[in-house]
Image 1 (cartoon, one colour):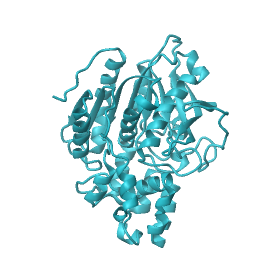
Image 2 (tube, one colour):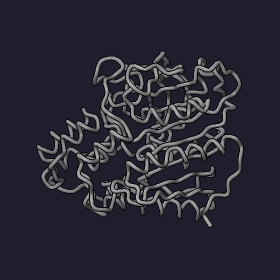
Image 3 (cartoon, one colour):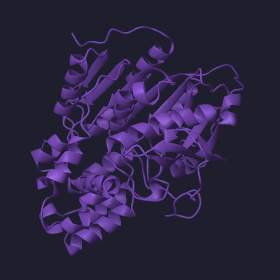
Image 4 (spheres, helix red, strand yellow):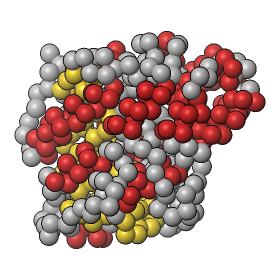
Length: 398
């Protein structure tokens, strides 16, 4: 259950890279460690319908206001089995006085951890989400931005980390929720807004799943393009390659156990493994690094879950590339990515191209995972801007 078939980077270095390009641990909006209060969706609620909304803040760095308005939202989405669930998130609009229809970006963040205090909606008011820089770049273009917290990250229950379907639906329904938020509607976010989808790493996985689901799940959204980077497109292949980063392997295991309780992760763990998993469930990315430094799966498990047909089946279900998105896609990946194997990006590109999809493939020479995020973000957003402006693209499949 790893991300890369390459020689693994020490988890401490991975954690530092995550701080640099993904997210850092931060306090909650209210009481640290608590999820959003359970609320009931209105009878007959559709995916993307709002359950609640409250004013929030968006800051790029601590203590410095931005010319934006923001709301923390709770909205109806869909879980891995197609059942209704509730997901939290944030809607942000530039405070620029514009009222005409404006573009909307639904943005998927990278790995932050499993605990509720790690959620994007908890980090934005404090200015402690490193990906706020990319989000702010979209806001400076005059776009509105919706950011999902994903299932179980900011709401009761475990976060379904790297489980594709609930990630994709959460990303799509965040856009719908933004369009149905009255305050955002007043600022030009409407059902007619052109929509872009973007994310890197876990966010690349989520945005790519949103791309594959959108035609059937959210045909009402006017999606113009999807930009996905550093995509862990085949978790089963990665797991079978062996030699992964223990902390990430356990995050994937916890996420799948949350989506599929019958997998019974607890039955595979030693007493020490159960203690580590408890710490991972309650921590953010740096906490996760500290909890797993020097650990091996052999000492944390009594048997390897990946050897079980049930686990193999569930990981295989997360494979991307089995269907064409139907929208133009910008796919980028560092050629020296030590966290998510470059081969996974190449294969996803080949799969989508073979199904006739328009794909703009952009390798980033010599870039590792962190460098790929930094170097790839601006070109990806430029490409999205051209699609939102209605400019055609042929991609580079041939």
